[in-house]
Image (cartoon, rainbow over all chains, first blue to last red):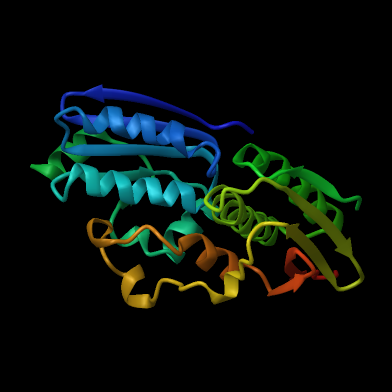
Length: 114
Length: 141
């Protein structure tokens, strides 16, 4: 399955919806979206992962790149990762740095950030 | 299964993933084991393409072969790039994996996932080829 990423920015929140398979051959698509989000004044990055079926270390490196580019002030939320994607996030310790949530509730996140 | 031969470029990762998926289906591996094996082969193939071919200024192919017997599924991945033994690479240690992303280095995660996701991994140099061998145990019901 091919990889697709779409970016939507509302106020200071960037939301990237990921679907398909994120590997080294498709990571640049993700990087482009992250770059576009980082160029804006955002404080939150929401990664919608429900439709992301596969994640390799190339995608993980993009997450590191994201966090280091955006700085410690930007909170990252991972929404509804599939079981094996979550397994990869846990094995590599990424779950310590991102907030993994089941559903994206804009009001709750705004409240958590305030 | 018959051998898959693809160019040593990142565009081949999709075909490699499909080949491994067909092999795991034929061997009856469960979903988790199938994912881990696909990930392991993908990660090592990515390193071969990136370090063994591209960064070395070389071009070449990747050769995949799956063998299934009563107890194991074995994937053989070969290339003609520079000598590259994944087992000799430096893996991220526990302290590194517990760091926040702001302080993380980028390297080593792929091989860490690959070697930790399969039941056995072996490397050998055969002539001018690197041979990476991935083994998964079949759980027979």
